[in-house]
Amino acid sequence: MLEIDPDNGYAAAHLGFVKYVYERDAAGGAPLLVQGLNSGDDRVTRDNRFYSKAGDALYRVGQKEQVLSYIFM
Image (tube, rainbow, N blue to C red):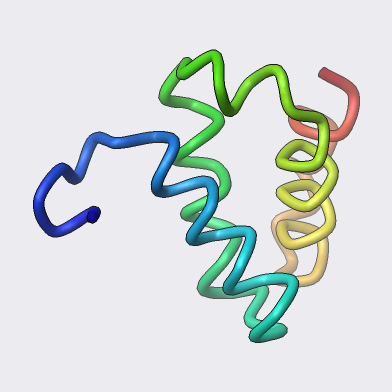
């Protein structure tokens, strides 16, 4: 889906969630989760799972300065 519509925040967030949770790929999931949250798509921003997983993934890849931006929104 992202190949067809690279600005689709809903697809990015879900793909990031799958990469992080099911494939255990924090490095691959974190940027997609952040992209989805930064898209402003209501379907993403009102779902707290994306914030907590983004914060956790960012922490695990060493981007600790960005973590607070996502876990306390």
